[in-house]
Image 1: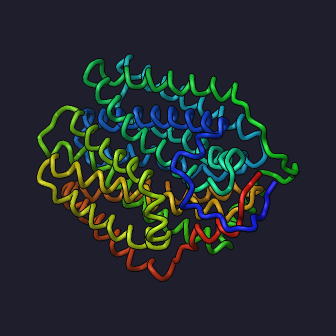
Image 2: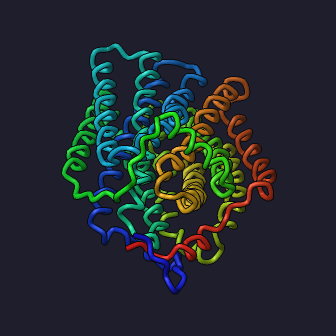
Image 3: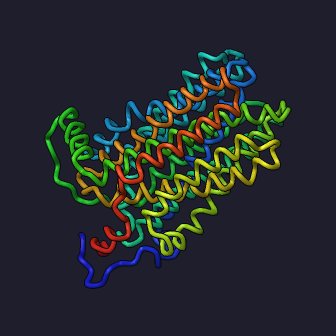
Length: 423
């Protein structure tokens, strides 16, 4: 039930950890933390193992593309299903799927059957699970938290994602050094399957939604049509696509950058990747203050310019000690921009279309991510890793100039104030 408050809700005054006082949300969030930890462990191990199987920079970057491309292809059908069936059961299915793909990677590694083709295929399969899981989780959030806490719930969602980006690489690096890649995939499979058991027993009370008899194709068309016609959602989609094009290119080139520092082991790569996640976690804590002081529009607009400058700094860093704090800053600005766009998209959607609308948003992000990793990975084979990173920085700054007026973002704060709370 939605209530219109007599007083505007100032989302910036909601405490960073307030949503965790809701037990249903805290359980869901805990599972989301574990799921992202498992995903990042497996992604890091796959990316590093690819550098041991081939010297091709393009193939190394294609690991990032393989994990992102399924989201572009499957997120909208997954969102349509999440709008039609029990969202918890769909979320449960995706956890089981990712557990099985991690087990497949472990089996192939132990059996000595892992080559570049098998690795890319199984990375793609793991990306399928993530693609189907994200819209279901995004649609579940507004069902278990109050509208006035949605912004911070989404920030905690970002904390889970980027916390996995810190913990996943560190755990993966330790396991790779001690027992090899198979151990990472075994642990990842166990974490995913245990998370599925928790969701199976989760105390979930779904909102009553009018059942619709429309076909899957009709459901997909209606979601895509709404996403196109809504100026607010369209602007968020364009900007998140640009953001993930830059970020995914940077992440895809990171294992190669670590090797330019003369490191043959995974420790430097995993430490640098963890710096990105640590910066994002700091961004979760700082975001309420940043939003209150500068507003969402300034965070998205000027944050994009700052991100381009930061990526240029990563390209020019002479060694890992210089790259680490710059990567930390990239994580902070990534979280601030991404969370702001995510909340803006969430608040632009009615519940009946939320999973499909967020699936389109996710498609825009992962479409940019898949393309960015592939294009700039191929470019690195011609101009080197640092040259490709400088090209990413130039592109990011250029897009900032182009989108500054063409794709304005409606302030999430104004929408939250108009919406009131949810009982």
